[in-house]
Amino acid sequence: MSRQEFQSRVRASRRVLLPIGILVLILVFAGPFGLFGITIPPFQAALRACLGISRDTADLVCLGLMLFSPFVLLLLVLYINRHYGLFCPRCGPRTPFFVNHVSKYGTCPKCKCRIVDPA
Image (cartoon, rainbow, N blue to C red):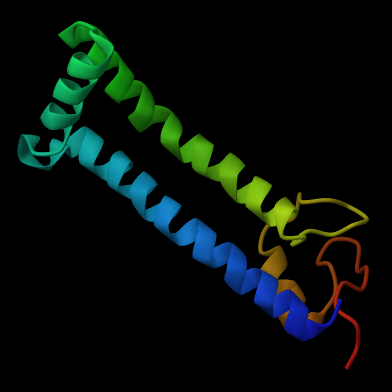
């Protein structure tokens, strides 16, 4: 793949991940601190109204969302990177900072496989 194609795939994946990442950060930080009680009570009321569940169950659903949203984001990042082809075909998506290293050197940081064709 050419360097230009790799950079366009990186930009496309970041366009997808940015709004989702912002939403997860809001969930993580608004949950424990509650933004002074502004964010969670309307969400709980909507859960109770739509699903017909009790307040305790709505609390548990909100707690589950806050606790597991970072893990969901990590899995989503791995899926998006695989979807856009931003991983090493030889050793897979196991290396951190893969995109930065390939953008700079054109090779996988782990196995040194050439990802980007030399210009």
